[in-house]
Length: 381
Ligand SMILES: *[C@@H]1O[C@H](CO)[C@@H](O)[C@H](O)[C@H]1NC(C)=O
Ligand SMILES: *[C@@H]1O[C@H](CO)[C@@H](O)[C@H](O)[C@H]1NC(C)=O
Ligand SMILES: *[C@@H]1O[C@H](CO)[C@@H](O)[C@H](O)[C@H]1NC(C)=O
Ligand SMILES: *[C@@H]1O[C@H](CO)[C@@H](O)[C@H](O)[C@H]1NC(C)=O
Image (cartoon, rainbow, N blue to C red; front, side):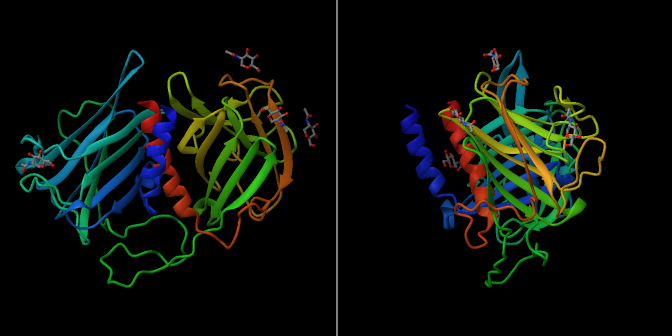
């Protein structure tokens, strides 16, 4: 059965072209979006990752006025640890009253997967660019649209939601912080711009732990993205320290919990060499995706280089730091685990292995995310 699902995933995932990132709400609402195909069959898929345990809303309108906006609201309702995903297609009418697209076949957003963990909701959805619901839906075209988003404190979608907006062209918006020249969010001509992405580099921490690393920018404007691949079905730790031990270390610990089928991951720091302590100043690592496959955990995480919390985090700079790592045989964080440390500079370290010619990380990131989501959806089913 796994084999069949894997085969389906391989086929599906191979069709995924590079997707693009929209960063809304100062990073608290990410959208990985991708437009595939042409003509009547063209679809858009969105992988939304938002800091909320309530609903997540997304949509678009032709004008800056709310009436006439086409939106959906979705999320995961957890009752007694049973997770119930939901999604509904709406239209905001006169007087800003939101109505469900009621006609037959008019619920056009297909929920591919939904998850809620660590205060975040992840939704993967897809829709035709042009639905046959001309009454309630807006066709997505290669022009500027007013993108709308909203998050709720709860899953109750009753009442008036607060929608924020941004004028973008969904065909070319890309907030991936890679290029020095800001990418256009307005309609472009047929000339496609190629942007050089940051290189992906590899770090082999030990026989069972490799990291793919991508770094862009500097300080508070920089971002580090890591793909941790660890030969364990337990938790995975990655940290930075000025000494080779846990004292003063800045740590991320996460994994995939096979029991409740969720990803987890939190920001910690080391007070002493004892157990790590959860950060209170801010949870800065964002788990973008991940899965567990045949005893191997893969996690994709991202953080700002300088989180401006020197008490609990270490700013990542172009200088040597100890990378400290650990992994456990199960998801219970303990001191009895495999671990190690190594002095290196994250701005330059490269242990080789397919690191190649300044390859663009974004296809990896984005394809990987979608691949994970799809894989997830299949494996969970
Ligand atoms: C839209 O298309 C779907 C099939 O893709 C069909 O089931 C539905 O009836 C159509 N709705 C309208 C309003 O034409
Ligand atoms: C890697 O994991 C295997 C078991 O999966 C273990 O036997 C081996 O010692 C580990 N290697 C290191 C360097 O920890
Ligand atoms: C941690 O490392 C620092 C620097 O190497 C050292 O001074 C300190 O004694 C170490 N602490 C422990 C508990 O090993
Ligand atoms: C998890 O691993 C730790 C350390 O290896 C072990 O002591 C503990 O019993 C394990 N817990 C479970 C539930 O298997």
